[in-house]
Image 1 (tube, rainbow, N blue to C red):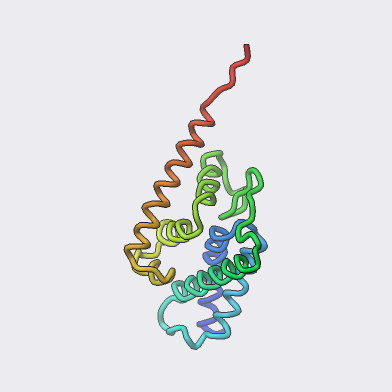
Image 2: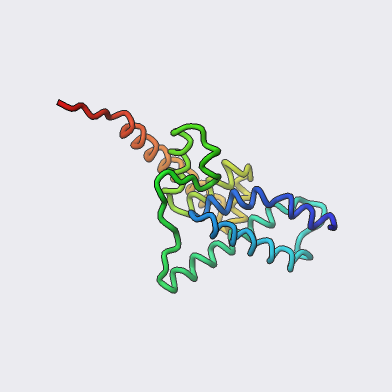
Length: 172
């Protein structure tokens, strides 16, 4: 395997994590990763050798995700799958040792896909605001707005979840 292909293969775990954050179904996320890898390998000459393929791959994946959402919308299909109770989407459920982690993942899945994508790219994947804005094809100000609103939404969802967990039922 040449160096370019090896570098692409090395990004698969991060691509999977991002796909799971975008989509709520494991199989759909794996399909998105596979489509991304297929497109990357057929267009490998578009990648600048010498730099990490990470930003290039995430851009490809995001564009494929947007295309899927648009196609599903035109066909009248639901673009996002409903959550099963206790299902962790960004990683397998067995990786979460406590209820707080599950609540964070559930809250992240409850916010809009645009805000979720922005938050995941910057906060989890570690891209700069400029890199994430470029990958998502939006101005930096729009990205910062999505992140701010996404964080606000997460806080509200997590505060509500904490309040519900702390309410005790007293039988008389």
